[in-house]
Image (cartoon, rainbow, N blue to C red):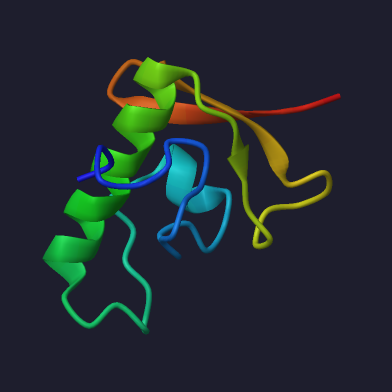
Length: 81
């Protein structure tokens, strides 16, 4: 899924809030296919955590840039400081 794109550029609007990182099974009213949205979000978070690729997202609180790490079955967003 991500090998076809520049690994430093995300083209997905999969993370609408920091809560979507901690609880990746959350769905949003704009998700057309909630189950696919959960899979896409989880795949993205796994990719970011495993690759160490930085995340920049306008929907996250300032600074909105950082790294995702895996925490058990979930994920944590660590903002750049």
